[in-house]
Length: 485
Image (tube, rainbow, N blue to C red; front, side, top):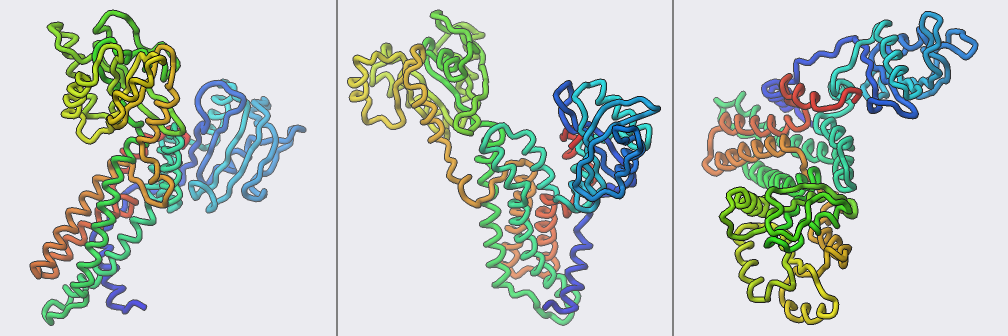
């Protein structure tokens, strides 16, 4: 059990660095289309606020045109009826009511499922606006969920990531974040640090008596443990970023090696121009493809060669730039044109540019009669396979190899993967502050300086989950949401 002094000190430190946003919840009831704009089989209009049920109830009728009560109905129930305004039937609808506080926003919510006519959608919205609702702003439903304590800030951001997820891996990571996997890890770090911070703050109140409430050895152990966890989270961003935005794969090689043909075959579409004329591709062409639940961004590049053509040379330079930026580089070569010795020379040049990227060497235009001889010739070269892009031979093997080069093992564990650059920035700030705490502990620095750096670390961690935030930050985050979410 905490002492009175420790509880008082914790309250003091919280008041010093926690600055919740000045956003204030009002009594407005908001309404917006929750399904995509445009015609469809059905559409859903969502209302949220203290008058949501009352507004819909005003215009909700039975099939015999009698007012149908909604306020007395149980939460999480659906009711069939008509929306009628000025004795005109607008549509037959299904109204689902959700009563506070057990709702997404923490407020009363009504969802009106109507026919998907755009005319009907707009008519219903205008009726609800007439009776007291106002149009919702982008992300306002999720903002209200955050302000009402239904989600923390990182979970709210994960909602947007979940909506935008376009592969199994990005969906899995977003779902883990939305369910609080990342938040809970940050909360534990913050709570452990806060316990020591409160003792350091308490020491400041007894500074004249020269007493220590916080054991410096235990504090140093804690700081090192937290730093280790933060370092792991920061390192996970490289993987998280490619999961979220797609794994960049550069297809490079000499002119006429078949790069554009390979891109077209992978996409099953004539995306790139294919010609026997060398140097056809002069700029990069990017397209996305999901393979076994993993999103890849394939980048077709200009053929690498020495040229006096200024435009083509710009394309060649871009090809080298793409090598540096890509997670995987496919070096494609024509098996009829390149000997083992020439290939080794070219691969050594490529390796100077790719850095930490994975290199996959692919021999194209194979003749199956000599395939076994090719395998023997290049047997000791790692990460090499042979295909025929034109004949679409061994393409599936290439896809399988690409997936295997992308390490998905992390996704099968409980490890947290950071996908948000804002979170990484906050983690870096917390890391820097805690490193200063460590330096201070090593040099026996005074308690007030230790307390200052610990506050900075706590504030940085609090920014991730929204315990420390401001209007500009919230405005920037929720403005990126779609209206209706």
